[in-house]
Length: 299
Image 1 (cartoon, helix red, strand yellow):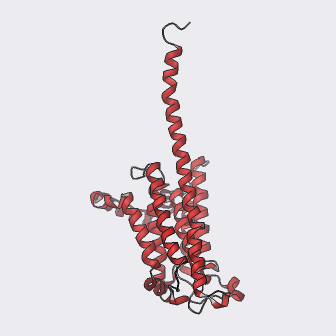
Image 2 (cartoon, rainbow, N blue to C red):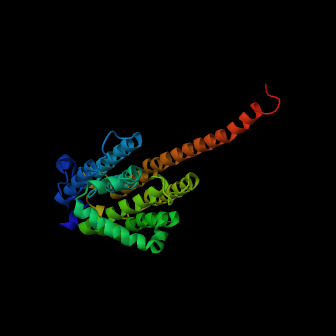
């Protein structure tokens, strides 16, 4: 059962039956449903503050992105096309992960969970806090960036990539690591304000570096002279694509749409940073202006 949590359905979908190829895996469906119910139960009493309402919308969008990536016919297409598989990865890494980081769902999910689970998580949290010195390196932005990049490159290597197409459990591990390391990175860049959150300037640098490595990997895929992945050697023809053309399309998806998804949050960080600097300068200038107006010689 665990082997199909985030795996493909096992069949390479053809164009004529793709819209019937929905992933009805009960474990995945139950997991998304329970997470949604726990989040709804954890809603604080009274009207939501604007910030909380915005976070709730981000969480809902993240759940929708996960459903599209893992439950919709896209999941079956990903077993036949590297390009569809790349869209799936983009949804996990660049849509669901940052939206989950923005929504900061931890406390609300905890409030909505059963009492036994809250107690178990509380004990685990206390043990983790007692080992804070050991876990501190995991909060380092450089390590979070490196782990995420390492996971992306590792699972796009031909040997492991082909293995995920043959082994549902391994594919589950791949998608889980994409989501977890992506969340760990994005929460340091765009998540709620915590001591571990990086400054806007460092966040922009980290996003630029992440986009740069993504472009490099996409260029390798796009301009390769031979297909990397044997798992698509016969499945792409039903879609009127040669395996190499399908791989090149996957590289372009990683290059252009994914590049824009890195650019947009970087621009948002830059705008927020500039506004904060302007506000700080305005506050610093106001006392000086008041001193001049009310100083000696004023009427």
